[in-house]
Image (tube, rainbow, N blue to C red; front, side, top):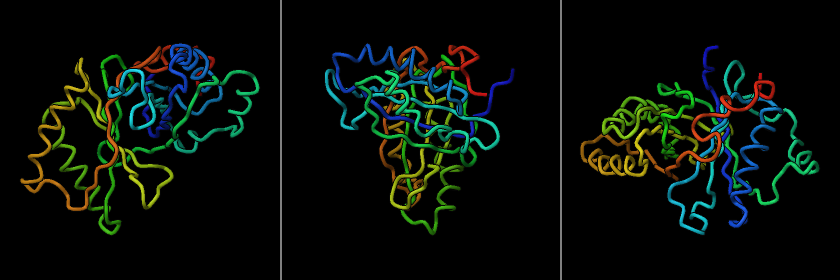
Length: 246
């Protein structure tokens, strides 16, 4: 069976609210929560990630520790990503299927855009992700900015070889005063942070060369590594077929 082409993502930023129970929470997320999500339907695979900059025994400044990235493919991918049963979380809670320490910081849906929209399928090759939220400071030149991002910025950043693939996304629920764009860089270095440091050393040389758009604004960015049972492999490889979304 051919691998589905991901057209939309839903990213959940979460954490366990009790460090003493984090192993238990992770076990619940892998063995209960993600399979329950497949049973509801909408996405074809999910991966789980943990931020690399997390201080021992404490919450990172960003407030979340983990990401769950659900991928949707096929016609109407964005609409299929939306919950078929908006009350399902309340149902899971009533059934005792929602872990008491689960803390959701945010959930953001995105759709693929532009030249860099062919996301690699989840695989062990990806040892980390670098996520970069960006925006254009002037909506009047946003089309020009997107063209620059696709044809100048991404090739410039990828030139240093820190990542083997990149995809670009825009929030489904676009907001004029937020960082609506997201770049996801797929890393295969055993040390994802080291790969990002190589990129960071390369980037300052771009502005003096006139390679940075005047209306480009970088926002939140962070590096994550695979976490838990599904890690970067994807739940489609491990969840029973009868529970996977059509």
